Amino acid sequence: MSPKIDPRVLRLARRIGKQIKAARIDAGLSQESVAKAIGMSRTNYARIEYGLTNVTIESLLRIADGLGVKLTVALGR
Image 1: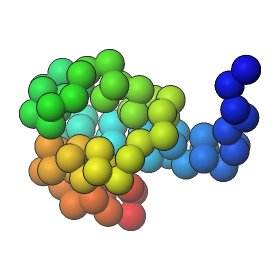
Image 2: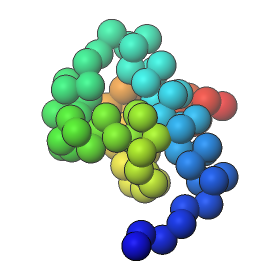
Image 3: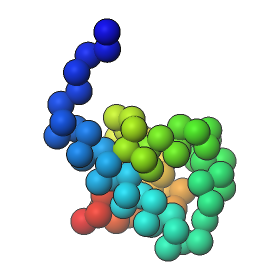
Image 4: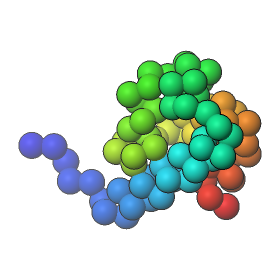
């Protein structure tokens, strides 16, 4: 049995994922191109966009760099 994840974490992960996806679309990039640029599989990158994983700060920084945006943009601030 997997541990129960706090619903607040899930909501935050989804919100961050939506912001990352919006920034990627605004930049005219595909999931594949961003994932390749930051050294991540497309599957893992997609899981972050869909809010299905607890993304690390390191990954957030890599994604923001790959999208050419400040981390605050990727976080929706």
